[in-house]
Length: 489
Image (cartoon, rainbow, N blue to C red; front, side, top):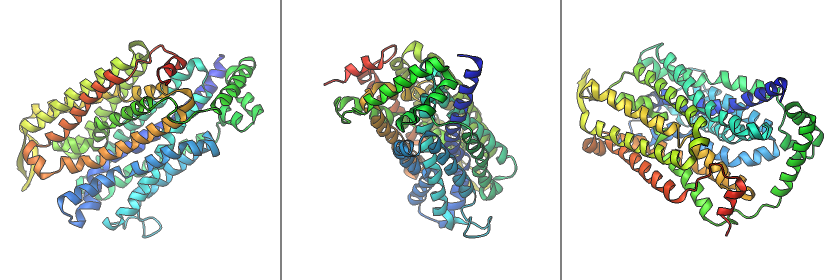
């Protein structure tokens, strides 16, 4: 491959990974706004504790309803609109959501005059953004996989996972910078709007870049546009290789047309894929990503310090994701997944015990607040969170997606992946919605000092390790055809 061909391929890949970056940006922006949304939308209603916590969980996790819809519809969108236009639709949805979430009163009242009664318009705009996330979560890696040469495909597709965690890190910096502009009262009334509005910049850039990239060769072949497909393949691979690849794509599509039913390889492979997807969320990762500032405030940190701490979370997430990308083909999938699950289980268990033994109620400005009894306990809790993030980033974050792309037989991979993706978003919704209900429950706080919730996630980590050891096959250095033999009836 010439340097010119590689540069062109790199441009297409980086453009597509903007979908992953916005995926991470949109899902993590909520971490800096969670407490402000509670103060702005929930507290004025004066609801009872359980109802208030449930609505708070709904507001924070509302985008996940859209993620489920976007993930499930990604296959249809990619088929009828195409990969490129599907990504353009996602960028447009990100843009609408950024503006509407920042200004839910838009088109109803003058901007800046929203109050708690705009709770539901806000939720609608977050759901719109979630649809964009769901589409991008499927279409960005799909686009990269369909334009990349076979010998570079794995590495280039992995960049999308890196883009997701990089987007999270970027928004943590953005949230922290905005929080420094005023006190808590300003943040709860105005600052959270700027956090959502900041997404307008990457969403607009994504839409602009998409205008200049082509549709994928595979989609052109699907639509019988063979000349267009050959032209794009030639830009990337040269004419001789392009012709061979075009014939291979035609052959693959002919084979795909003869797919069997979803359970034609038995129930085991589908169940294993779904349970992997569910455990990826039930071990609690998005609780930490969405509610990190609230968790750090439970530890006694001020608002700006709690948002600064999320930057460390994002940095650890990105560093250990890179480690996973570099080592997954060397050490195998099962070992990394088991080790990661156990590391997360130990970290969550230790975090729960730190809350249980070292958290106490004190008076601060006439109000009763929870604080650690010593600075050392707060540092220990912070380290346990970083260890947990590292364990996830080097295992269940990227490697779950690797396994899901490998274990399903060719004939059912598309439908099975759509099902597993939906399972991930549904599980994410359940965990994100229930965390404030559990973590802010007066009975559980009285008995366990916020520790019980983290023990639950620790238990899930142990169960996840047992499940992988017992049921998940090693896929390292095995062809997809070899793996397919495992599931034949």
